[in-house]
Image (cartoon, rainbow, N blue to C red; front, top):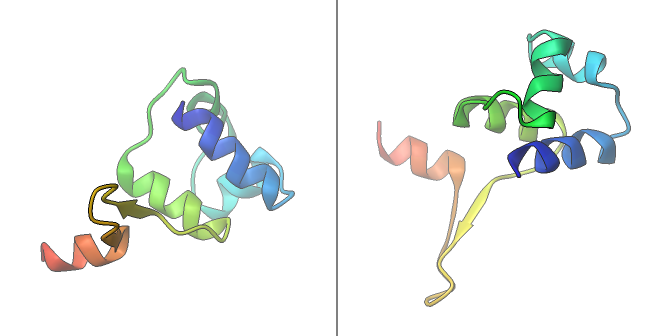
Length: 78
């Protein structure tokens, strides 16, 4: 499933795997593996891809509608 999300973010920016891989300092074959589900990226890698593609990771509590951005959560933990 995460591979589909990664591919959607990349294609919405209209860039190739090679271009995105260069932007996030990774190999194109590794990025391909993440998109196909052959490999699993770390959360930090998902954040780098989201940032490079202009997306923001937001967690929402369905019961309270409270929202936290991924970078806010990580900064609180430091």
